[in-house]
Amino acid sequence: MGIADIILIGIGLSMDAFAVSICKGLKMKVIDFRQCFVIALFFGGFQAVMPLIGYALSINFVEYVNAYSHWVTLVLLVFIGANMIRESFGDREEDGCCNPAIVMKELITLAVATSIDALAVGVTFGTLGHRLQLSIWLSVLIIGGITFVLSIGGVFIGNVFGVKYKTKSEIAGGIILILIGIKVVLEHYL
Image (cartoon, rainbow, N blue to C red; front, side):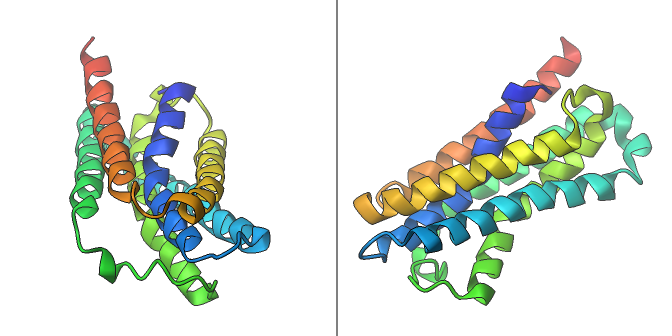
């Protein structure tokens, strides 16, 4: 798994944070650059930390699943991607993401909720072992950086266009993760 795969995973994983950022931007009458930066910092930071935690957890059992790592990767990414797609059709009122105030407790909750999928991706990184061509540190920095940038963009887009594209971005993120899972299995057999 090379840099292109990590970038695509970062884009796929950041779609939840992007969608929540759109909600935050929707309620801002005028873009508050400080709030925009704090939102992006939380989402990008959590998106970087969660795969690192998943990777650390997987180290203990990587030798046991290494023979099946491509299938583990496929199952986890398909599960995550399908869950993102399923959630894109869910009830939007329960998100609670459209409150304009940055309340730390709420922001931490949203950051954790939008980065849980990244924890499972970190586990898959651990199962990939030598096939993860980039270091785990560079991988998580790329994922966090992409989420940071897309979160800033989400606040601006939300402010300008509203939540019109939220469902589409979640579906696209889910499809990207599923396709990467399929690619990992195909690479194993080709």
